[in-house]
Length: 132
Image 1 (cartoon, rainbow, N blue to C red):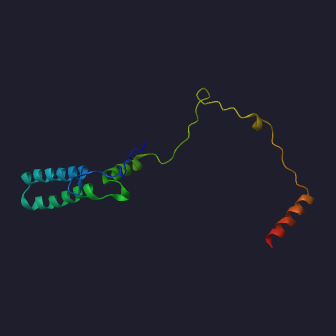
Image 2 (cartoon, rainbow, N blue to C red):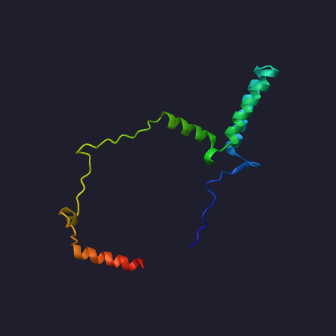
Image 3 (tube, rainbow, N blue to C red):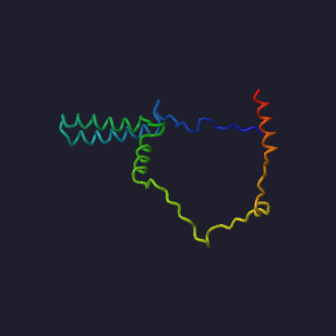
């Protein structure tokens, strides 16, 4: 039987025009904050706050550093900053540590190969012949 394998599963679906659901949510959140600021601030203060809020929420919606969303990038940065940088290995107690048995071939001492001067000279001649 042949089955269709889904492709491009890592690409988010477009909801409204070229915007994904996350992008639309960030832009809607920024719009709600701007609406609240419009009601509480005078015109000059609102314009300054609107620029700042628009830049922040625009970056959250569209900017993708290292091909990941800005929110996950910020979360990864904070977790890296507050996580210990040195991993300390903690040995397991004897009761918990698994017992590994070696095969019979590995138990005995290995024999060392002995090369005398005659074999060494033969090897060097063979290598010299291969160079030419």
